[in-house]
Image (tube, rainbow, N blue to C red; front, side, top):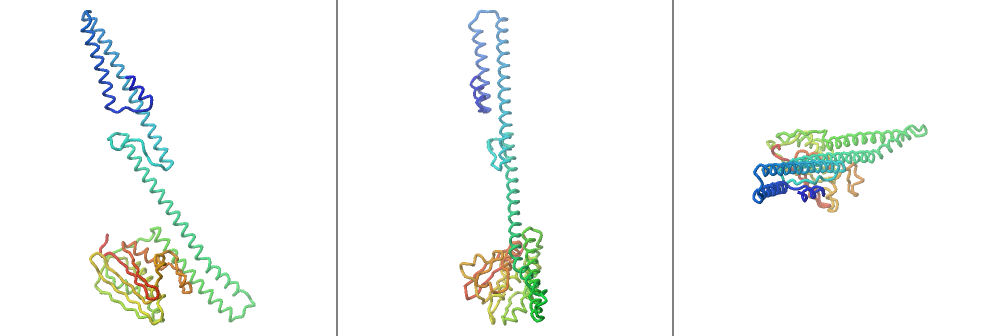
Length: 355
């Protein structure tokens, strides 16, 4: 018993087997002692029974005392571990201390604390990611608005100068109008990006015909393609159906088509082909444009990224980024193959069925 108490005082909690082994040993020793007393003494039976009763009473209260020490120590140890684990949770550290392999109250509490830690950690990480996303958006807005606002200020100062001739005033007014339109377009794009990234825009993907969606996207590049005498060829079965959101899929395809027309020289070609497979439908947009260098092929889907060689061409570098975001939210993906000076092929894959 002394060894059991010493182990508890040192902070080591005996197992259930150790507890019952110690108690059984005390009981056996007590019974053995009583038997020896009966066997080795010549006293009358009444006296021996009284002695035996006293010994058993002492043993009984001793066992109760040991039980009380064990369970008090267990409770203190359990409470200390709970406090330690709660401190670990507060400090964003892992939970440990109890064995999860045993079916005990302690292991159940630790399992729940582990679940609480995982949930709290996930919420903290999500909050941090949202904060970083907001910071990126604010930084992007600040960077992108800087140039048009500076131009508008310069044009406004020039137009309001009474010494500027009327002919130049009209020229700068036209430039001012262009900058205002660019600023308006930029704000609309940034708003779309923000709403898509924050989940404020919910795409309603339904199984429906692709042809009307593709026609809607093509209508946006008809004039610009005609101005550059670019031939646009379309191969799409009017009965072809797949799961998609008409409005946003048309926007994504328009961004890819606009990109193809913008970077294809006059007299070039843009071809659009839709092909349905077992699980996905592939929409391929190929052009005979300037292509993308191999070193930059992984960067073209980044927000506001533009290759150095196209900085003279109007654009802000968000079309491909938006297209990928939209297609991704429809459980699809985009692949690109390109050779510099030969053209590019963008392949959009969308699921035929929802889910």
